[in-house]
Image 1 (tube, rainbow, N blue to C red):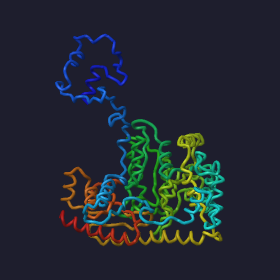
Image 2: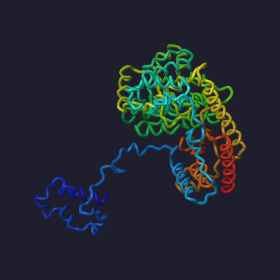
Image 3: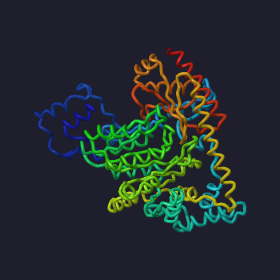
Image 4: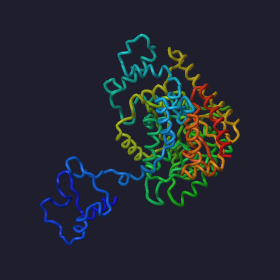
Length: 541
């Protein structure tokens, strides 16, 4: 840094062209009495500066345009715990195992992320058949594929430019797919109308969420946009707000009441935030990630009334809408409840809701398919939204095709229907069984308490970390639950995400663990967690 400063003092720099910046090589020399001249007469070594490295031809290489000091500062504030240092170390351990290094475990079990197929969940046959047909249309002549898969593939291909998934689509998404999404929403919501023009196909739900936040964020200082997010939260939200330079407003879910949402807590968070920012949006994840709760209809009504009263834009992340397991729980879409509350709300409250092909029974994370529906958006803003999505040309067309299959699956009487229902039911039943197993085993461990996993794909148990361990972690500059999870990884090969990456009340510690591994592997994982916690607690007590 000192070397660069000295160059600025001298005011010149030798470039690859062989000229001095701001002065040609034939320009008159600087006055011998000038400070810059006197300073430059000393060697870099005598001035206490690092000697510049020369290239082979004796020319000083050009300084980097982009450095850690000159890059976008908001990017440096972005954190994403789901793929953070724990996961990086897990990858290293996998490599070390493959190279024959001895470890106290035979394999690394990554329970850190909701990547269903990576955890062994099988894809839905019909979806993959249609996608195969769309990718390689010559297979339409193959008699091994059922006719309903072929007809679905032909319909999708006819909607693509040149009858190929390799062509761009409209920026908002393929028209026929948006129409199918609209019909799906109408069926799901008991006949509440849905306009295909309010549907935007997206690169997974994350893309739609990020796009809406871009539209919402504005202002400076106390007028800067504030966005209310639940704590614990999915790190996409905190990362997106950091990148956009928005203000994160935390509202805490009630762990003692199965991670429920209290309107009084929303009010507290909003009132405090108004002193330093302009709260404009409220984000809800239902079913919850990482907490696995399913909101009641009454709670959703309260949230809608709160948003209407306080003038907030609602963002409903509903990607786990098919993942509901607990008795007495049911998924209610925000749009359905909004419209059933009458015109006082359905004509005024602004809502964006999101869905994805990555979760539910599909688990097709890699295809990056999704959609968002917008309600009551200002027409001029909607035009800007359409402009904004056009910049990235279009979402991946295979992801759009998969989204079409999710919202328009095989129907009764079609050749693929029975097998589709069998596979879908088996996947969701297995998840429900594993949700209960996770809760049961974790709650047998002294020092671990786990709320019922009502929905989604994760548990977020609370752990008690002994004071000695907290002190050792603090001395090492680590969060105590990061210290705990890293120890678990090194000793058992189990990769979990510390609760501090999602947010938690001060003085409490958690980890997030997916319920996706096959039952036998999940049983092994849970028993290893139990043994580790007991050993860890004994060591630090």
